[in-house]
Length: 274
Image (cartoon, rainbow, N blue to C red; front, side, top):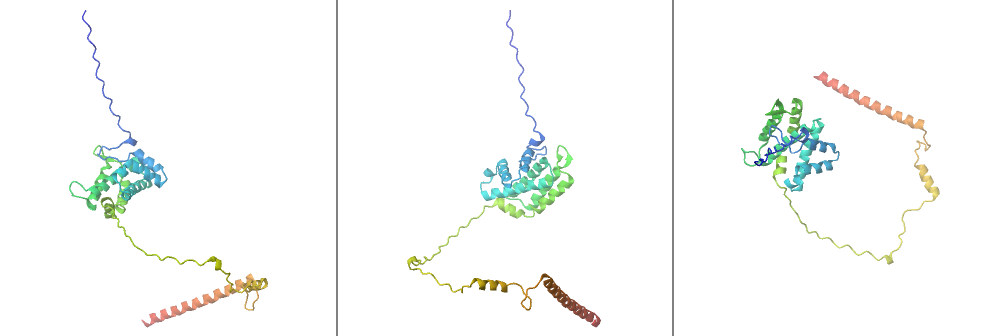
């Protein structure tokens, strides 16, 4: 009897990687890569402390390795954090906040490194054109080339924000991310005089006070003199004080009315002379 042939098992199919859910996506079909996932944006928005937000944002974006200089790293971190805060203020969703952050990150990198058509850093007009392209690309419903991530009103408000912040101070941002900070150290040699040796305490004597001492009766009399009194030295009651104040107000009002009447008469005379 011939031996049985071994049954060949079908090769196991490699399990396909599950597609990321909406909150964990790192790249859109438009080709835009998201440095922050929508869930990461939600984690940042949930924190109320600025220090905690800066710390988690620095870890998620790897800013310590990308920007070893502390001053530059703080500027870049504040730039991204302010963009996310504004997105939250506009009541955008976490996905919209992640897409807006990605667009602004592309523009900041472009301002630093330039594009393929330019050598060195790009200019403000070129960066703004790129910003418009990316925003329109994610504001029109034409899948898969375009995605309607933002509505027309949201795109307009985001454009106003970018115009009054990044592009209004474009050269300043570009200088901060492109140029190293210059540090100048100044050293001065200052001669300080040695203080005089204090006198010996053994020769100290009590100094006689020149202020005349007052008896308790004199102190009471002085306090009595400080009390408000009338023309004859008598104390004034509340009714008399109120009467004096009203008289002063009437006198002031009369003087102001006289000045106003005089100016009005001069004005009428000038009109009559013309």
